[in-house]
Length: 207
Image (cartoon, rainbow, N blue to C red):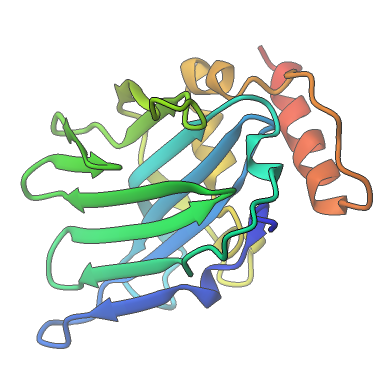
């Protein structure tokens, strides 16, 4: 099973049809040898280039944890939203590990794998450590970063892992969280993994 680059176009979405459509971009993918990200960005319309981070969740485990092959067939990713409200949920499996997020912006709260997280008014990033630990991942940090971003309609950041690394670059804490220099044997014949390594390494040069 491979969950390194996943296009948002393949997400299953269920939404209310009683209000004007809210446009959400869900970026998912491996952004470092140890971190898998789920990043939700909103846009005022489908044609708008001006987005705003709603919530970014970074799941960190031991280096290469997301490369583990498991026998069980994973659940397909599922994104459910209420378009007239700041409320949505996302559920998927990565290498046998459940990654579930429930977000309620009006209540300033989220739930990560069943653990409730209270969010201050501007907090929009949650980091989880030890996601592959038998005891399960633990909430490490909850922080606020500048949320606004401009993404052209045909930009690759509209798919795959989205604008995750653009947002990470705004915080030294998040750059360190990626552990871009983690020692792991790179899988063969994986150009996507090599590209991730190169993007991640560029952060080390700016620290």
